[in-house]
Length: 492
Ligand code: F0G
Image (cartoon, rainbow, N blue to C red; front, top):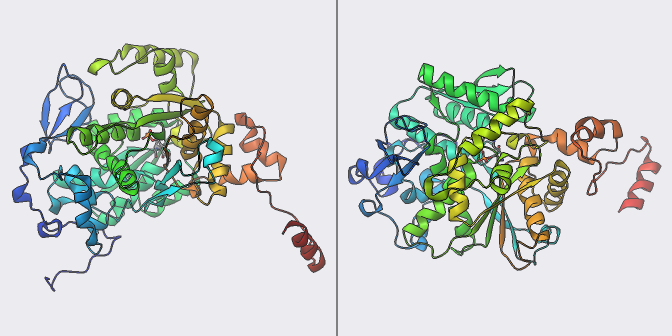
């Protein structure tokens, strides 16, 4: 061991030396990984060190592609486990980079980690009856356990690794909260990048805003919602050459693939029947589809799980386009004019996305085309759920000991709906992705459990939520010992 090497803490973003991964950049043919246009008619390829968010040739999204024959990939998924005894090594500790072989777009010495991805797939027998599946069939993948409190860290460490590779000095995102907290955290942890975040005014939760401010991000509030901020940040990033870390950045999605690898790992490499995920900008669903397609291509799995993407009722673009207007991947030639037409209709009506699940309050999902591919690959379905269903599901998840934010609970509400429709069978093994931590949005949680009708109406009533069937209400008692004891006897 090199005793002169400084000790590494897990919350210190780490640039690794090649021997730590038992790999080396010399053995990593850089042209074995490249960026490729998603549109099969174009299929233009670009070097990994180019900073692109769409194909310069045709404007489609980009994928990261691997020439697997030239890369050291495992022969079985179990083989990956051999590395995991190296818990002292931040890169093998990371729940993203311990799958390095399946996302090796950068040499190991460029990899950035902050200990992300230590997340749990929890068998949730208290939630199973709510969804309507058999005991042992409901699993919750809790991504709120990430360092900045959401699944975004999976993708952000990958984007920062790429940014490190290209020497970027400023990074920007539009956000409803989680992306900005993650960007701000990695910027301050690495001390290599100035973070710039664009938020719609009044459209970010205090929990998340507090993170971005404390981590030192430059915070720009624009008059508008997430869709407006997303449009602007893309223009600004292009104009000023700022590195963009929203999920149009294809490297982000490489990190998010590992959520699925961890699900499989926890199921001892068995494929569940269903993956159910909330849909906003559709980065997760896209990356999950890509993860399974690649594992299949590598012969590491023999079947695909089914994918269910769940929109909120007030932000249901994907549902509308796929389930009502017949938009499909169509072998790589989706009729995206159907989407353009729909967006024109929304604009003509002045319609804005509106849901308590702020993280998925998005009308123009940037990864639409990639998500269509994932839906086709995984025989997917799309559903939408109301804010009432989301909050009831969230209360059920919370009562089982996991605190998630409203957007996350859309997955559980969606699984319940699919079970009621008979699409999910009682014996199906269902994995719901809980994308973010409960502490993002305590206002919604407290309003659901409150005894104060005015507060309830103010926060939730205005969104069509009329009851709190699973509320755990606090009890007001006088400051008097006898009253307190009487109350406790009554309730315990
Ligand atoms: N769940 C949570 C907790 C999120 O923060 C987001 C997106 C999503 C789901 C949607 O995921 O885009 O992969 O479909 N949050 C973005 C943000 C908008 O700014 O943090 P997707």
